[in-house]
Image (cartoon, rainbow, N blue to C red; front, top):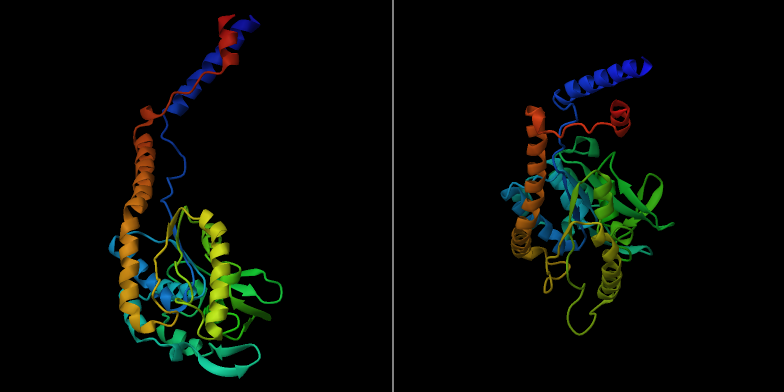
Length: 319
């Protein structure tokens, strides 16, 4: 008698299970693939980033997050604030060293980038991280501890200045009571910060060249720059491992202060990015296929796999 009652309970449980399997899936909708962009440094050579953004927009590749170091922070801040790639190209054609910095006498460096505040106030369409159209992370390095600092909130201008404060050339920048220098020391290629923002796929942009070309250094800036360039190349290896795709424009032949060759640099950025578009489209198409499958299951519950009966219940009914 007890066994008969137990079998009835089992049959009732199975009927309930069949009913549940016919109810459309209540799972959360398939999240669209998010693409993050990590923009490295390179001073004037970093104008190549403008061409990369221009090509991605032309190909309608959505960028959900950006992290920038040094000039990558400057261009990233402008773009995330709403400055279009075409507008950035126009700005790049006009900008010169004197718009961003001025020479100074100091034991901490040869130049100050204080002028960058006015420059940013003129080009940025918003003034804080919270107002940006696209989420942005800006990297800097704590001079005292060597700790990597990632800014994602508050005013934009000083974090950008700090990220661009190349040691030995530019004076360090004080932000929130900390003396900061160029972000490339801690995050030469900011792939990890953009991944931590939530990017499913990360595109890293790393410039391939040396600070100085030719037989040897011509002045102290070449010595400082070449030393950091070598260290940056060594440090980039780990950062590249955190990326799904690394774009490496070859800027050999361009000087660190070649602002007047901005048109060529933008064109180079566009060219190398177009070559990478097929790989990026594979990510998006794969994500779209997964999304369509999820929607199909919701609309047609029969597509879902039937529930597998519990072995313990089978054993009871066979007795």
